[in-house]
Length: 88
Image (cartoon, rainbow, N blue to C red):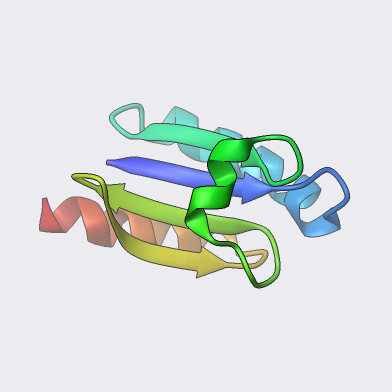
Protein backbone atom coordinates (compact mmCIF):
# COMPACT_ATOMS: atom_id res chain seq x y z
CA UNK A 1 0.00 0.00 0.00
CA UNK A 2 1.09 3.56 -0.70
CA UNK A 3 -0.03 6.70 1.04
CA UNK A 4 0.54 9.68 -1.25
CA UNK A 5 0.52 13.14 0.31
CA UNK A 6 0.29 16.13 -2.02
CA UNK A 7 0.81 19.56 -0.54
CA UNK A 8 2.42 22.95 -1.19
CA UNK A 9 4.60 25.33 0.79
CA UNK A 10 2.01 28.12 0.51
CA UNK A 11 -0.79 25.90 1.90
CA UNK A 12 -1.32 26.54 5.62
CA UNK A 13 -3.36 23.34 6.10
CA UNK A 14 -0.53 21.37 4.49
CA UNK A 15 1.98 22.79 6.94
CA UNK A 16 -0.31 21.95 9.86
CA UNK A 17 -0.68 18.35 8.62
CA UNK A 18 3.06 17.68 8.20
CA UNK A 19 3.49 16.53 11.81
CA UNK A 20 0.47 14.23 11.57
CA UNK A 21 1.75 12.59 8.39
CA UNK A 22 5.15 12.04 10.03
CA UNK A 23 3.42 10.37 12.99
CA UNK A 24 1.46 8.11 10.62
CA UNK A 25 4.70 7.08 8.92
CA UNK A 26 6.04 5.95 12.28
CA UNK A 27 2.80 4.14 13.16
CA UNK A 28 2.60 2.24 9.86
CA UNK A 29 6.07 1.16 8.70
CA UNK A 30 4.47 -1.38 6.34
CA UNK A 31 3.00 1.44 4.25
CA UNK A 32 5.07 3.40 1.75
CA UNK A 33 4.53 7.10 2.41
CA UNK A 34 5.33 9.42 -0.49
CA UNK A 35 5.12 13.20 -0.27
CA UNK A 36 4.93 15.53 -3.26
CA UNK A 37 4.97 19.30 -3.42
CA UNK A 38 2.46 20.40 -6.03
CA UNK A 39 4.69 23.26 -7.19
CA UNK A 40 7.99 21.38 -7.42
CA UNK A 41 7.30 17.69 -8.10
CA UNK A 42 6.22 16.88 -11.65
CA UNK A 43 5.09 13.46 -10.42
CA UNK A 44 2.26 15.13 -8.50
CA UNK A 45 0.69 16.28 -11.79
CA UNK A 46 -0.39 12.74 -12.66
CA UNK A 47 -2.83 12.76 -9.72
CA UNK A 48 -4.88 15.58 -11.28
CA UNK A 49 -5.28 17.81 -8.25
CA UNK A 50 -8.07 20.26 -9.05
CA UNK A 51 -9.44 21.00 -5.61
CA UNK A 52 -8.00 22.25 -2.35
CA UNK A 53 -4.90 20.95 -0.62
CA UNK A 54 -3.68 18.85 1.02
CA UNK A 55 -4.73 15.72 -0.83
CA UNK A 56 -4.08 12.20 0.47
CA UNK A 57 -4.36 9.22 -1.84
CA UNK A 58 -4.33 5.55 -0.87
CA UNK A 59 -3.02 3.28 -3.60
CA UNK A 60 -3.04 -0.50 -3.85
CA UNK A 61 -1.56 -2.40 -6.79
CA UNK A 62 -1.06 0.94 -8.60
CA UNK A 63 -4.80 1.71 -8.37
CA UNK A 64 -6.19 4.64 -6.43
CA UNK A 65 -8.57 3.27 -3.82
CA UNK A 66 -9.28 6.35 -1.71
CA UNK A 67 -8.82 10.14 -1.98
CA UNK A 68 -9.03 12.35 1.09
CA UNK A 69 -9.12 16.10 0.51
CA UNK A 70 -8.30 18.89 2.92
CA UNK A 71 -7.02 19.17 6.46
CA UNK A 72 -8.11 16.13 8.49
CA UNK A 73 -7.96 15.00 12.08
CA UNK A 74 -5.38 12.31 12.71
CA UNK A 75 -8.14 9.89 13.77
CA UNK A 76 -9.85 10.26 10.38
CA UNK A 77 -6.65 9.37 8.53
CA UNK A 78 -6.01 6.45 10.88
CA UNK A 79 -9.53 5.11 10.31
CA UNK A 80 -9.08 5.29 6.54
CA UNK A 81 -5.75 3.48 6.76
CA UNK A 82 -7.15 0.84 9.13
CA UNK A 83 -10.17 0.26 6.89
CA UNK A 84 -7.81 -0.29 4.01
CA UNK A 85 -5.52 -2.64 5.95
CA UNK A 86 -8.50 -4.77 7.03
CA UNK A 87 -9.41 -5.28 3.35
CA UNK A 88 -5.94 -6.58 2.48
